[in-house]
Structure formats: structure tokens, C-alpha cells
Image (cartoon, rainbow, N blue to C red; front, side, top):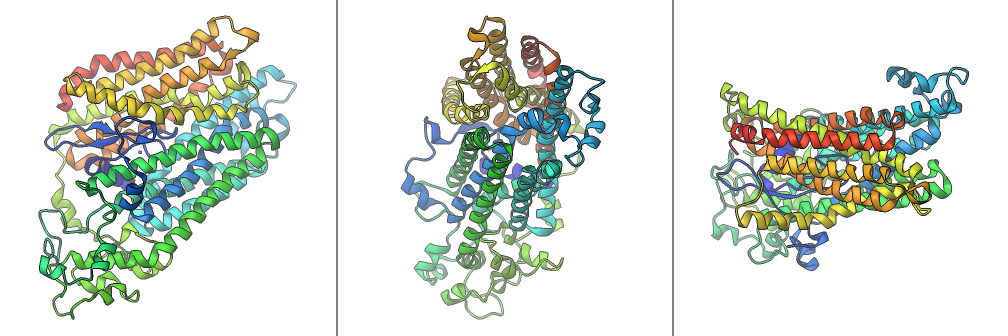
Length: 634
């Protein structure tokens, strides 16, 4: 995944220590992540710190300090993300089950708008065949295959639309507006899912809404920890000088200075920095992703088992409405204070309290909500004022709509400045670019196998696994738990290996991840060939498969995003990140097609096929890791 969304993601990975994860980033399952730090002078990041939710060396040491060290908007965004992920993963846990067991029944074919057309386009003739031409047994196989195909199409398109969402936010509407639009569209989509006639329309709404919402809420968090333009940089911005004289700074009221210091300054610990708070913020954010991903299958599974699919889909939509409510009210509540902070930062970016040709600016000016930050610096043109020329309104109007801390109010570089920072395309970089594309192709194979968790594995658990009476959707809650538990241990292992000079290179880590994924599905192959008790496989085998597969995910997902963004030529970092996320798009799409084999193969053979694909991927990646590393200079 990323055009303008890529710009945000790549900037965070490269400069801010981005915590990558599937809610926002590298795969469509919930929350694997790392804090990625770039060492100056090196060509690749080393994943070092992680969220402390599960143990290990914590980034988050004291809850009271954390609450005081971050802007309130972070907690609003994190709370919003919990509910958005609740809605997404709740619906996703039921999707393939609902399609195969209910929606695609012969009686529903004419009730679901667009279903016949979609089935014809996908070549699912067996689903449409009349009862006189196909047996119920063969039709059920065709239904399962088509369900898998639809699942893959849906989960892949969720990635594709984020490109457009980032572009629209960056060029036209701003992140705040796109987040609200995305949440409203997704909530409407979940409402459509609860009725069979509008189910396909509901999927389309969620795909579009996710594209509007997902890239922009992640980008807003990164922008919370951006220093004002001209601060912390070697060159001052246009119409500014690089800093503020200490004597003049003292003239500002102490309360105002404490209130409007750069985001996260209040409550900071000794030796703390904006970089540390930024890393910690993304830990909090991805903890929120995992929390939503964990709770959702438990809640919607319980509702589905007692009330049916319609109320369960409605519950997922209600979660999205709660997230929208939290975001809109929270940002509106913070709006006035944030406008004051923006005015303070605009003032702080100047060398003094008096701008040329203007009267001295006082604390009263900062607290005057009838003034905006552009009044303090004629040389600074905000993003919002740029947007106003396109008819989107002045900055004050955007803020009054609830855009607290809107990163779109940051000063924007001119095209000339952007071009000065970049470099032109070079033929010498072709080997490096081709190697990056090759690495992303290996990721496609990984995700095609990994994403069977929400697809054929759900079907397998519903039919052949002893669940002791619990809803099958609860299986989807296992992965986020293992993400939280295993991440600190993986970090600790890599730290120890690094200390003794034995830490694997990034491509080698990715090969290990593929091998672990192979071992995960290999356990299900063993479960099938060993005689099960009572005719059903023990759930222990499924838990073991998910644990090993999740460990493999941690070796590939965050490492891969960090790697491709770091080794890419400087002028195409965003393009490189888009390569990586397109790997998730194609991986999910192929996962759907791969899943069409499940009903036509013995289960043991299917799981052996998955294990073989992942193992072949690991072997080939291991064999080419040397040449690839040489080409990429890592």
C-alpha cells in the first residue's frame, strides 16, 4: 500500500520510527508491529522496540506518565481506532461463514442485488446452476469456492482504496474530513450488510469507507509529533528564522507556553524526546488495533450464535457509529484549544514576537479564537488556506467543524522546495528497484497462505474442529492475542542476537517468517493424518497453527515494510512502500483464489499444499538473500 498515503507511511517509517501493523499497514489481519528505528548512516532499519502490552522491555513504563506525555487527541484517535477495527474484524470474522452457509443458498440468489452478475463475472457457474443440473453436494463445493473468492476480492480491495483515500485527503479535502466521511460510509455499509438485498452494496461501501478512513487516521497520529516548520531543521522555512530568541520567548505567559508547547511536551520524563513519544504513540495506537481485533470476534460471534447474522452485522456497524461519535465529539471538544496551540506554534516559528509591519503579539492574541495563526506570519501559508482556494473553506472554518490538531494546517512546501529535496531518476538504481520488486513478490506468496486464517481455516473450524460449543468466530480472536504476547519476545531475541553479532539480515528474517508459516500449516496437516478422537480435530492443533503462523508474521510483516522503505532510492521511498502494500493486495486476492481449491481437495492435501507454498517461498528467498542483499547493499 501508497501514493499520498505512501508519503505519510514512508515518512513515518523513515523518520519517525513507525510501528507497522495490519490495521494500518502491512497486512489485513490485526496488528503485528514493531517500532522501527533508522540508524543514521545505515541503509536499513532495525526493528528494535515494541509495545509493552505483552511484556519485555517496555516503551510504556508508567501509565500516569504516559497519559501526561501525549496530546489528548492521541487518545481520541486510539479510541476511534478500537471501534473501527471492532467493526471491520467483527464483520470479517463472519464473512466467509455467512456467504457459504446462508447468503449463497439457492433461495437467496434472486434476493441479493448484484449477486448473479457477480457470480457470472467470477465464473461461479455451479452456484447459479439449477437443482436439476447439479447435486446439492457439488453445489455446496461451488458455494464454498465462490465464498473464498469473494472473501479474497473484498480483503484485497480494502487495500486498493487506501491509495485514493490518501490522495483525496492530501490534495483536496484534508485528513479530518476524510476520516469522518470514511466512518459514515462504513457505518452505512454495515447497515446494508444486515439486509440480504443490499449485502453486495454494503461490501462496496465498506471498501470505499475504509479507503477514506484508514490511511488518514494513521497519518494524523504521525503529524501530532511533527515539530513546527523551521524547528529542529538546519534551514529555516520561507519567511521564518530558525528559532526564537530566549529573551523574547520569556515574554510569553508561562501558562500559554506550557499549554502550547509541541504536542506531547507536557508530562514528559527526564531524557524524553518527541521521537520517544512518537514511538510510544504508535505503540498505543497499535495496541488499540489489537484490542478492537480481539474483542470483535468474541462479541459478534456471541450475537451471531444467539440472534443470527443480521443482528451481528448490525452490532459491527454500531461499533463504527461509536467510533464516529468518539471522534467527532472529541475533536470538537479539543478544537478551541488546538487552534490556540496552532497560533502559538506559528508564533514560535518566528524569531521574535513582532512580525514585520505588525503589532506585538501577546498572550491575549493567542487566546483570541477570532484570530488564526496565519495573522502572525504573512510569510507562512497554511495548508488550510491553500485548500480555501479550492472552495473547502478557511482554516478557522475547518477547525470549527471539529478538526482539532488537523495536520493539514501545517505549512506546505512549494513544488520547487519539494523538488529541491528530491533527486532525479537514475539508471544506476534499476538493479536496486528490481530487487525491491522481487522481495515484494515473495511477500505476495506469504500473504496468499497466511490469509487463509480468515478464509478456509474458518470453514475448517466450523466443520471439522471440536470447538466445545463456542462460536467459530472466536477463533479469529487468537491471532491478536499472540501478536501482543509474542512481539516482546521476538524483540528480546533480536536484541540478544544483535549484541553478539548474529542477528539475521532483513531478507533472512523474511525467509524465517515464511518457514514458520509453513510449519504452522504443517501442524494442521499432521492433525489431519493422525486419527482424531470423536471424528473431529482438537482445537489445540488450530491454536498451535495460529501461534506459529503469527510468529512467522512478526518475522516478515514489520521487517518487510521497514526494509523496502529504507533501501529504496531516496526519491522513490513512497513508491517502494506502495510496492509492499500492493503485495498485500495481490496476496489477499490470491488467497481467495487459492481457497477455491479447499472444497475440492482432501483437507490434509490442502494444508500440505499451503505448507509447501510457504516452504518453497522460504527456500527460494533464503537462496537469493545473498544476491539480493548485495544488490540492495545491506
